[in-house]
Amino acid sequence: MTETARTNTRDIARAAVRAQLAQVAFELFHREGFDKVTLDDLAAAAGVSRSTFLRYFGTKEDAVLAAFDGHDRRLADALRARPSGEDDWTALRRALDTVIERYHQDPAAALATTRLVRETPALCARHLEKQHGWRPALAEALAERAGSADSADSPTLGQSVRAAAALDCLNVALDHWLASDGRLDLVDLLDEAFAALAPR
Amino acid sequence: MTETARTNTRDIARAAVRAQLAQVAFELFHREGFDKVTLDDLAAAAGVSRSTFLRYFGTKEDAVLAAFDGHDRRLADALRARPSGEDDWTALRRALDTVIERYHQDPAAALATTRLVRETPALCARHLEKQHGWRPALAEALAERAGSADSADSPTLGQSVRAAAALDCLNVALDHWLASDGRLDLVDLLDEAFAALAPR
DNA sequence: GCTACCGTGACACTCAGTTTCACACCTGGA
DNA sequence: TCCAGGTGTGAAACTGAGTGTCACGGTAGC
Picture 1: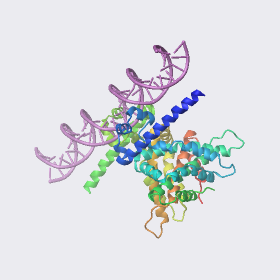
Picture 2: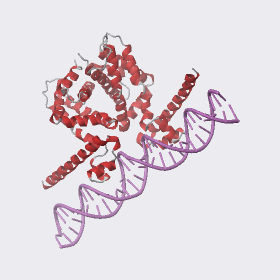
Picture 3: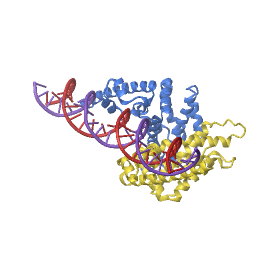
Picture 4: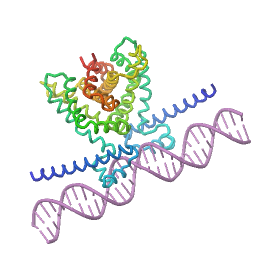
């Protein structure tokens, strides 16, 4: 108990520092451009050593992309929470509401982050890679929903494809949202993207 | 005329050297593992200097991923060659036959390359990035096909989504093909993937 | 044969990321 | 009070990727 409590306080402190570092890093990237900023710059701006910065974020990119941490878990959980009768495509669409929510909470910040990521090749690539890693978790969640009798539920090809396609819908919707400077409604765009690919 | 001819011979020579370097690099990566091989190793094995190697391939990854160069052009051309009445999804499926063909020509090599790419995070990420770059070209080809009256044909959201989804189908099909050690039929897998997401 | 060009190699440089070590601090127990 | 172990931090050396510069050597055109 004391141990978990102590661990928790430590973790909370760590998370706070991490958030602070991410904030400083984002401002610097936003102002100077991602590529112009070196790890030394980041460390200096944040008032820590290069070593410490790299302990909090394994790479320069992570300082930005940490904002997307846990999306896979949240999405998978949201999927599992959908009614079992619902078809995959609708479930995926609804699960994405969980993600979209964050864009509505602070549209300006979301827009800035999205723009930075899209305009920086290195960040865009890493983000793609990260997002690609979400697919298995989503597909598995779909498999769990479907698997009523058999417990051995490794995702089918179809489930993997639908999971991937849903993420594409998110990305394309975000692209258009970004192109409109946030003026278009993200929910509408996402609905349109999903409609363009409604299975069956 | 002489100039273009001279340029051509030069380009052909360059392409040959490039292919040779790629071959040597692949064998080394395959044998030692992508991460274990340094640029110096590659240069030494190929009998050129590090500088020269980097002139042919901008990055270590490119030495492998050059195998996928031009896929976007070929796909877009294949799309434009499809009958104008055909729906996007069918056209995309048929266009992918162009890519699949290469896997049938030399399945062993294709399998080895695909496995190397999938098993190496750095390669997988770069490949994803590269493939992501194909989407605009595909979407634009779809837009051209559709755009009968209006010449201003920037892709719609739906066209972008379908282009992206088609590439996902390819990737998922390849994943399953790889998991089966090439025993499953790639065409069947791709058909199944496309069927899991048939629009409309 | 002279000249302009182009591919190559050598080298120096920047920067990301890894690893190692030492120091400071805090906490719990004798 | 002092001591032992764990933990976060900083300093520094190191590896390796990628960039830029320059000088050499061959080849083609005049």
